[in-house]
Amino acid sequence: MTRSHLFDADPTRPATDAEALLVEDIRRRRRLVWQIMLSGIALLAVAAMMLPERATTLVAIALFLAFASVKFLHDLSQCPRCAGRFNRWGLWSSSCGECGLPLRKHPIS
Image: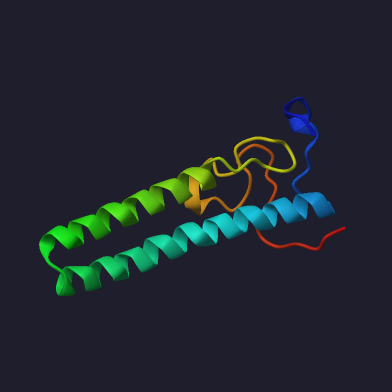
């Protein structure tokens, strides 16, 4: 579907097999962002207690670069239904910002 068909997109319509696979990929990217962020905080706390300041700084820089690159890829996710930016509202959106396709799992038609 192209962006010109945006108003034909029905968020209540069950996802096709292809849409469901692509929504699963968006969920996987979102989980990866959260995993890197939360594990990075724990790793940084441990590094701050056990490593010298310079090494802790390097760990913080590496974690920031990892988080920024994964978050960038997450933000580029396109909605499989309307090809709009799925993550318009960041990690908190539960549906496409353009057509309303839900991120939650729903039966595949």
